[in-house]
Each structure stands twice: as C-alpha cells, then as structure tokens.
Length: 182
Image (cartoon, helix red, strand yellow):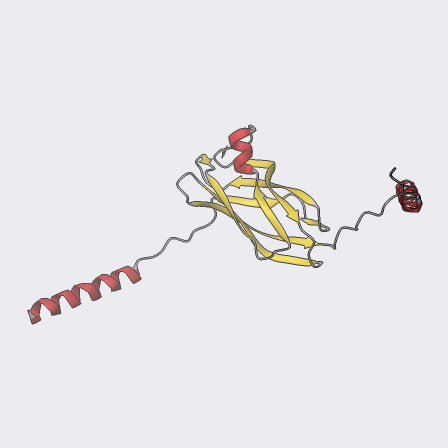
C-alpha cells in the first residue's frame, strides 16, 4: 500500500512538472476592434458607436454574441452588431484578413451623471462557440447634465389666464345667495 502511494506521488509530481514546462500559446485577438469616433456627450444623450473590425486570421470568422463590462452607473450600453446581423442585414461574419469599416457596434445611453471621463469599459465580441474574437477597451466622456427645458413665454400666458378665470369663477360661485325653498 505504501509503495502504491509513493508511485502515485511520483507520477503526479512528474505530470505537474511536465505541464509547467509546456509552452503556452500567446493569445492575440483574432479580430481587432477600433472606434471610428470618441464617445462623448451630456446626460440624456443617446450615442450610436461605430467602429472598424479587422480579421487577423486567414479564415472567415462568424459573430455569435457580445457582452459589455461597464464600470459606471453614468451610462448604459446595448448591443447593435448582433441585432443588426440577425434582423437588419448587418454583417454576421468577417472574411479572412478582411476589414469591416463603420460597423454599428453598440449604443450608449448617457444618464444624468457627474461630468467626467469613465475609462476601462469593455466590449467583447464572441464566435458561435463562445470563444472571444476580440475585445475593445473604451471610454465614455460625460460632459454634463442636459439642461432642463424652460417653458415658452407663450405657454405661460394662457396658463396664467386659465388660473385667473378659475379663481374668478370660484369667487362668483361662493358669493351667490342661497336659494330659498318654498
């Protein structure tokens, strides 16, 4: 029994040594993603983000999904590339060593947040098996809150006249003499 444990321990140690000595393959993104524009706007803005996709491999790659990692509550993101591919005729794959320009990647909805630059947000593009094709690290510059709309002077005048008419009518109604019953 003692000899079996010793053999098992030696085999396990040899296997671990062999695994640590095997070279690992460095992984580069198969698809490079770059933005066609800066993402910037005040609270309340909706920004459609366009970008360029470059296939760094010698085979055609199909898009299967995407995800976001957002590090702030100042904005939300919704995917466009997968929805456009499924319903609106957008690209669903990229040719070998090809480039897709001005692709609708995603939409940012900026809520009223503190004006600042929000960095280290991630957009990941996956193939149909769930493997990552490419990752984009992006920033969103919230420039301030959108101004509250001010009422037009032309709408304030009818509102004020309506209030005056209501007050006058209420005074007349309260000032009437009670009707005596016979």
